[in-house]
Amino acid sequence: MTNKLKYFIGNWKMFGDFSSFKIVHKINQFSHKLKNKHKIKIILCVPNTLIYFFRKKLKTKYISLGVQNCHSQQDYGPFTGAISSLMLKKAGAEYIILGHSENRAEGESNQLIKKKILSSLKQKLNIIFCIGETFNEKKAGKTFSILKKQIRNSLAKNFNVNKILFAYEPVWSIGTNKIPKIEELEKIIKFIKNEIKKNYKVKKDVKVLYGGSVNSNNIRLFSFIPQIDGFLIGGASQSSKKFIDIMKNYYK
Ligand code: PEP
Image 1 (tube, rainbow, N blue to C red):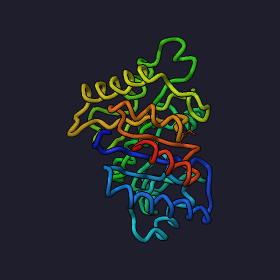
Image 2 (cartoon, rainbow, N blue to C red):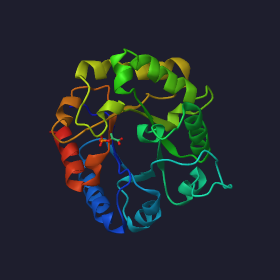
Image 3 (cartoon, rainbow, N blue to C red):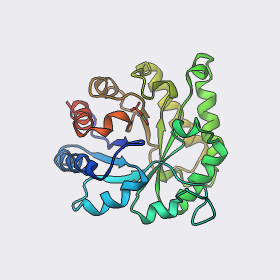
C-alpha cells in the first residue's frame, strides 16, 4: 500500500439537514483515528444551507468542509437566488466542486465554469474541478479530446492550477454502478496529469481523483492504481457507514 497522500471527498449533492451533523461527526472521529496511520485528507462538500452550521458545530476539525457550486460573479450582485464564492468563503467553505456533470447537464458551459473557477481562485478556495465524457462521447472514441477541451476551455494559462484538484468523473459512471476498466482509467489519469503539466505552471504533483459509483466493494480495485490521488464519492458519502467502509477497505 502506498504512503502517498490520498483524498476522500464526499459530494452530498442535494441532501441533508441540520440533523445530518451526526454523519459529519462520525466521519470526523474516524478521520482522527485514520490520520495516525495514513496520509489522508477527508473533505465533505455539503449544501450551502449547511456549511455555516457544520463549521460552527465541528469543534475539533480533522476533516475539511466544502460546497458544490457558486455563481460566476465573485462578490455581490443582482442575481436572484444565487450565491457567490465570496459568500461561501465567508460561510466557512474551504473547498468548492465546480464543473460537476449534473450542473453541466443543466447548461453550464466550459466558459461559464472558467468564470466560476476564476472567482473561486480569487476567494482562495480550493477547487475540485470535475471533467469527464458522456457515454456517447466514449463510444465515439472522443474521451481524450473531450477532456482536453474541458481543461483548455475552462483554465486560462495564468490560473493557479496548484489550488485545483482534478476529478475525472465519466458521466456514464455517476450513480449507475458502472465503473471504467482499470487499464483505461490508468491511461486517462496519466493523460490528465500530462495535459496539466504540459500546459500550466505546476509547482508540485498534479492531483487527479476518480469519481463515479465508488463503493466499499469496488474501492479495492482502484487501490491498485497508484496514480489515482483520491476519490470523489457521491451517493455513498451520504451515509457515514458507507463512506467510512470505503476508506477502511481502501487501506485493508
Ligand atoms: C458524484 O456525484 O460526484 C459522484 C461521483 O456520484 P456517485 O458516487 O453517486 O456516482
